[in-house]
Amino acid sequence: MKPLEGIRILDLSHVLAMPYCTMILGDLGAEVIKVEKLGTGDDSREFGPFKNGESAYFMSINRNKKSITLNLKDEKGKEILRGLIKHSDVITENYRPGTMQKLGFSYEDIKKINPNIIYATICGFGHDTVYPGKPGYDIIAQAFGGLMSITGYPDNPPTRVGSSLADIMSGMFTAIAILASLRNKDKTGEGAYIDTAMVDCIVAVLENAMVRYTVTGEIPKRMGSRHPSLTPFDVFKTADNYIVIGIGNDHLWELFCNNISEFNYLLSDEKFKTNELRSKNEPILKPLIEKWTKGYKSEELLDILSKSGVPCSPVNTIEEVLNDPNTKHRQMLYEFDHPIAGNMKTANSPLAISNACCKNHFRSPTLGEHTEEILSKILNYTKDEIESLRKNKVV
Image (cartoon, rainbow, N blue to C red; front, side, top):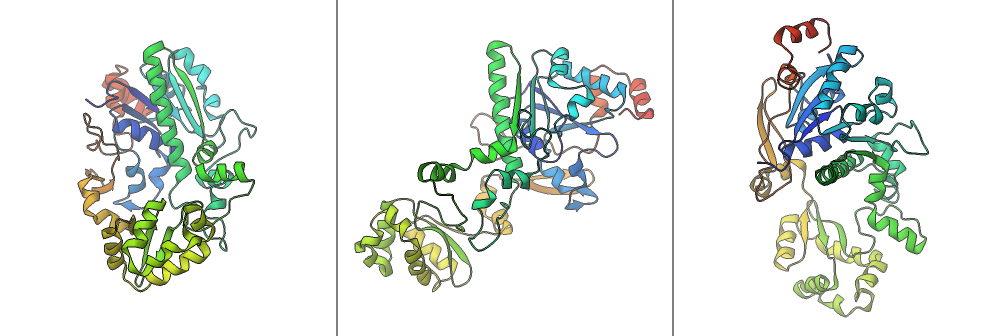
């Protein structure tokens, strides 16, 4: 059994933040019922790239879910939703603040249907905020939360991280909060209301930048790929590409200098004796190292550094990551056959639990694929009743 088998999650979310959360919970064995708009479904079904007209983007974040379509502007659609709420442990959504209240499904409304429900919501600034109703996308959260101000190179504009980090981190933090709430519910029988703000999640992962400001009063700035307090810890140009060298302590510095003859002399240089001094004198040290790295191809350098015990890495393209033998060994590619798109590959779950398989999944659903199953098995609707709902454009 997977850890969350027996837990039912009613998922009203769309696009990325909350769907990423519910995908994690589905990977762990929860039954996730994805409630989608009648006719169009989750907005991300219209996001590319496409294969045979089906969104690969949608498939990459909606595995292990069942899809039911509902018209929540119709009273019968709301009646179905209320029925599903009665039979669920968790309800999730990431609508713009105020939307669920307008539909008649605020937390207070839902508690009247299921008093012990765990209700989880994600939005840009949270529901309890001094910015009520302010919309938030990933790029807004990265900008407002300070992450973009420290990402990129000093002479270039503030830069969004290459992955939708605010969406993904808020999904991960919400999954943690749901797991904690389920544990608490086991002990007390009480449900919970979870109010996750994307901006909060960005602030929470600023780690070094936050304390650098609170301790020194200096506002952190963009510094490219180098680390603010570890040196050398950066990207270095080679004869044919780039590599990363990560020397995180004085012992590794000694290994580097002792095992690479070109740098034996640096061990006695007072400017580089400690990590603090190396960081202070980084503008002097990096050119010395990069002059050396430019004389070798990346593969040669990585071999030299690895044999010396110095942490290093190529700067892989996505293609190189996918073809790396360790990616395959760790089962980080999820390959499946989709009824419309055909054979597909997406990133797999990184979860590796000794007594639970989190790598094998049910593919992402087609729009409304499980509508009849959910209505009949959970709410006991007959085939005639379901057909009537279809004709009346309720499901």
